[in-house]
Image (cartoon, rainbow, N blue to C red; front, top):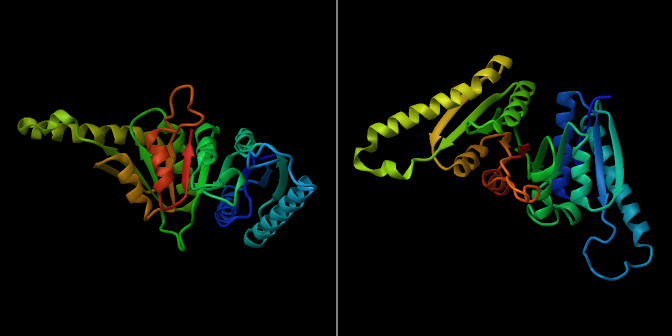
Length: 282
């Protein structure tokens, strides 16, 4: 059986947007969709016993959320195979585990509580920073498609999985792919005699971007690639580009023993400020 696309939902508006996004992507990729609701045993960390029949109430509520989500998918994409799963546990941990066996994990940027209680709170960042593969965080989807996907590149090997995901998405959607390479002027370059050096630096960055894109352009010859090499801060450039994008794809450069909690600074900032769905690909 093909790997499923997994989407987490709690019935909130952004979770509903995530379910819709996941349904569309499952249809594009020809994959089954698994809708997951995580039932936190006692989500507010209060050191007291839950009210009587709390577990029964949460179970019934979770089953209703899943039923409504599955119905919405069938109405939107009747050709997609849908299953649902109610799981009890810590939401961020459960979703990370689900991502380990999924083609991709889709979550909303905020919810009613549980795994996305605050605007890109620690749980969302924890899942995006730790889960293997692609994690798509959906804040909202454009009213109409712009016909462009944006992927951030920087010449590093960590960009490979993000490029693969972005090229596949562009090919499936039949849209353009903007490969955005943002670089910043070295501090020493502000010297008066540095004009010639800056020209050489600019040319070097263009060459790096071209070399990184070349094998992917050869693998996906039908994708219209826009090489966008610009002197700007990566976060500002990516957020600005997201205004006119259907999807923004970034790699994760988290480092150190706390990489499960802390994403790379660029991907973390983009998750907070992008205007379109963001895919973080480890």
